[in-house]
Image (tube, rainbow, N blue to C red; front, side):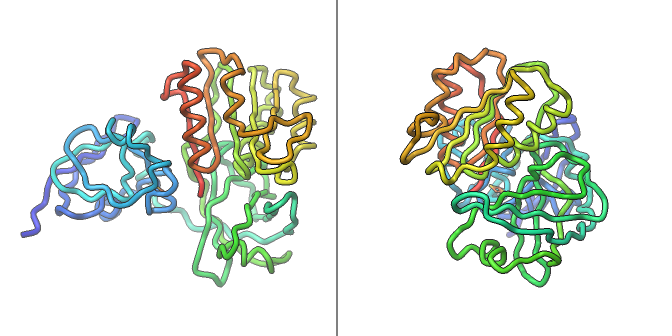
Length: 331
Ligand code: FES
């Protein structure tokens, strides 16, 4: 017998939706059938975009990356709804407003490739023009669907909001579908872009900030720093960047220019191999312990799951509460 059970979805604005869901059904699918588009990206437990909190009851979690959801967090009730199946009555809380879930996916935005060029080892800069500038929160991402293909990938905008010219930094992945497309992409090729998504964005707060980036995780911080520069923001901000080698680093000239214009911004580099005198030899997260972080610091971590997890541990060890740490993971 396929019985239904009550599932309550709670949102940050206090709105609650109660659904009757057949046992065994995925929460994300049940929500979609009820007109609620829960935030997801990878849909297979690898990115953490959908992270939510189980308030009561139990759910069955299918395979997921424990670097995205460590056992300790799982034990504390954190769940990844994209891989959750309903097994009984439960309540799940989402860290964003119900209006974000209720909004129907807007029509895609037509884009045209302006150019593709290599900016570092394994990293390409893809520039896309769109008919009208789009507003977004610095740090958000769009899904890019190359015309004539059956795949899409998500990338953060590195440019300022409102621009008609979008910049994406893409890490080349051997045999990756997007990387293969990028190898032959040229000016004039068409892409479809989703509207901006994501909860990893610059908070407008009067407190120090720590940004930690791994690889192309620098992209959202470029957008954030460009916005801070446009506002002549005066809060102390430290950016730590980690990469495999110096040749994997990019946008260093622009970061130097931002550092020059905003004296309270500091940038520190770390590379795993062949570090030069101005780089830490090792991981960016190694540097956190010696920063002497102000207890009110807001932390932003963006990079591969192991880097994000190391960053969370290091900031926790430095005395910062988990609630003050925002994470964006990518594979
Ligand atoms: S969407 Fe759930 S982990 Fe990626």
